[in-house]
Amino acid sequence: MKNILTNELKNICKSDNDKIAYFLVFFILMLKYNNLKKIGDKKRKC
Image (cartoon, rainbow, N blue to C red; front, top):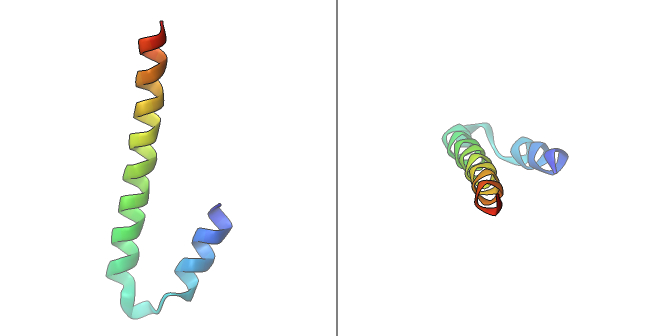
């Protein structure tokens, strides 16, 4: 998964640095949101 992301970022032109930054921030937020959801689900099951 990480390899695919890094390859995609390398393919994007350097002039699109803002897009890359937004994409990375969005991706990180999605990962955090998914982790929070998993933690929340575990707490509910108890």
